[in-house]
Length: 447
Image 1: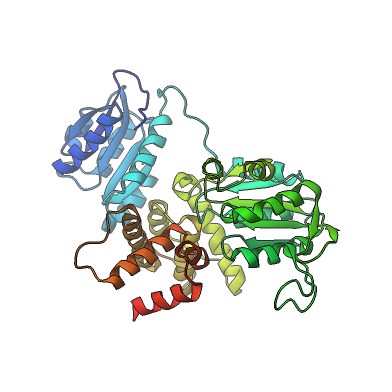
Image 2: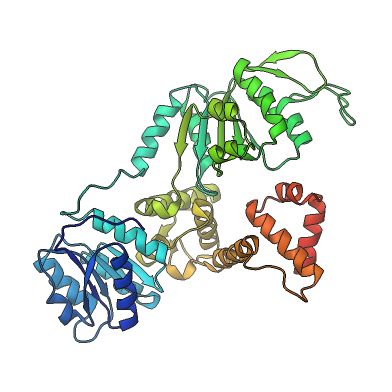
């Protein structure tokens, strides 16, 4: 765990009436090389308020003096020191008050370790005396600026980032902002089709090239002429097909399957992947020359958990799109709902956030979406299932004596689907079975 450099005499104040919580938090800061002053209530905490304090972590409910009064004293004596409020989900209305009274952030118990670390680091590196300054993060303005720059060029683009971070949306934005905006935007998922179908979809085929080819057919590359071709999940493109794509990128000519004719195609390529293409190149699963050819302009999209300050803006944009699509007045999130949304880890990134807001907008009784309208049960169950599948893939959830063959088969299929981001076509290729077989197996597990 990387340490945060602070002045030698600096410290963090932790005020919580639960002794276990105090010890856990103190151990976390000890790993960061930061000393702590512990208090069981607000009266004890204010004794430690001073010029060397860098951060105050305050529980909302404490005897003798609660978190809100303690926060008020902090702002009187040390107005520049950030405060992180911590309490239960039932006390979210008080959290809203705390934010309005000057708290820098709020976390709901039980605290998610990843979210806690992210917020603590942001608060500490932003404190007046922290040195050295942190590396610049990619915030929304930076992303929009880079999109503007990339859109102004016609070179090939590679978008990288975790699943669900919005790579497809950004690819479309690059197209819409560029000189090719009046041309077509054509998309294909390289992981969704077997090798033979993917080749035909990309490059087209001549009549009689194979069984069922009853006429000439143009491919996606030709269809994107004058516009943009988006190659999603390019890291899953079969190795034997990559040289043909490389040839097209070099000379802009397409040769349909079964044809000797070269056709010119004026197309800009935008590719995306959630994989480490550099590592795939080292493993000889992706061509190095193709990697350099597609990554002329490279843009990394941060996961949602690293874009905490943007979640409110992103949520509003999603709700605006939902309202426009349904022909309804704008949806508005209550303060309590905004706090809940801002303090979730969102392992599914923007895609998960979209699903939660879509359900909330569908079932809300009005255009105001409250915390009661937010249903995280599905995303939580999926996260738990993913964790189980990851354990199975890692060997923690493995075969044990007496386990039925059906159960072993189920674990193998679920673990492979998790590794393939639930892409059944890709999982079928890895397991060397048909996609229909996977579908039938999954259906039988639910029956």
